[in-house]
Image (cartoon, rainbow, N blue to C red; front, side, top):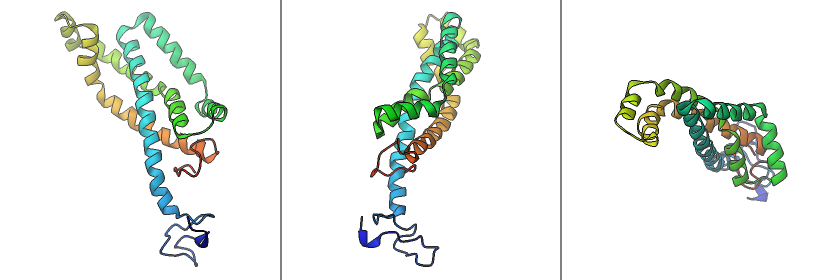
Length: 194
């Protein structure tokens, strides 16, 4: 931060400087440095939200797809309730009530973005559940947990990786939206949203 270098325009403007390629803000902070440093925070948010929501959604989806019946009906009802709530409005309300910080944003988004994991894992588990190697593992006397963790889950990893990648990017965009509105990660911490 250098107040003598306030409001320098980007290099492509007439008074731009090579010392500050993207210019500086009203406090003399270099925009390029803030974008680079903000990427650490934004990528941390994306990865953490992906892990939290992935754990919740994968467990629910595996349970619904593997056991079926009442478990499937309950999980499907919970997914439907979650999908009925607009994600950005709920996130805005919770963050505005609790207060914006890095960990609040991660926790709120992680607890709200599990639905896509659950839907995809449920459908994929239903497809894998009826295959011969699952029946062979059950016939060999493997426990239910062993069948799920050792036979079903490894065959669902490609779908899980795709959903995780999309959800991490979506979490970064939601964090940017919250930060842009002033309810996400609070300044002076730089993120891609602020």
